[in-house]
Image (cartoon, rainbow, N blue to C red; front, side, top):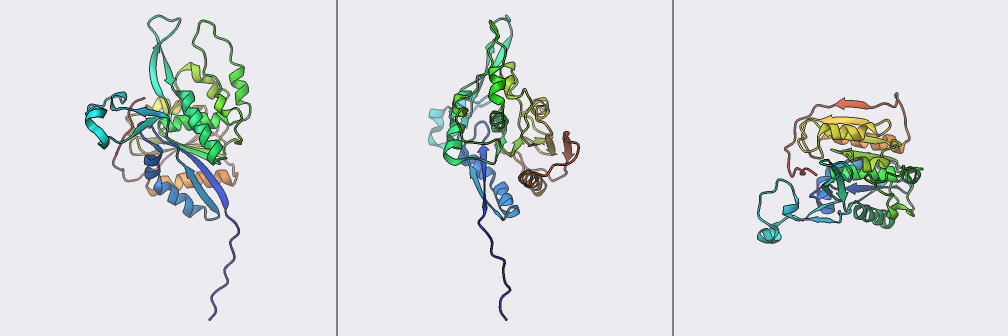
Length: 293
């Protein structure tokens, strides 16, 4: 009996996703933590060749840089210390014209954008971005920077003489050959809280976004996550019962994969408003939680 005829598969469509790790992590560590997601995407999209790129943030963190760290110093820990990186450092600075008040500054932010822009130039263009925690905040900013007209929003910001200046449009993004992203997956994300970063969010983001929130997240305050959700048009939200981590169980993987497929198929529906979906699932253990930033 002759074997059944199989329909020959045509060439696979490339699907490239930019992966941005959290504070105190690295590209290789984030790769290890997202293997289940990579596997789920590969299985659900058999006609696509999945390529995930994992840059590492340019800010090398020492133990003393990490709030709440009470372990040995870097010299004492030696080579046993897990390399830790970030996309920027947060500093509370005195407000220039308001005595006693402080403003939040992300030092090294432009270096972080340069590292991301280099990855886009070398390994892109990308179809989407996935970020966790600080990397999710960065993912929202990157999606914003790649949208049409965003540079005009930066250039049209009113001059604030004697006030804190707004963050400039990154020069590293000025000549990138990268179209607007088709989707962004935001895990434990948050909005940059200071008015100096308003141009990333006003006008609001048009890039389709899916936000994952942990009901027990003790690291990123829900109000900060909601702040980012509110500036993303048509944002979808999924809440899992765990804490500050990227959930890898079936319901959460299905939600992520389904959203990516929907965006790739350019399917729209509903009223376009925010959709909060509470899914029930056995809790995971919280491991390697990020720290405040």
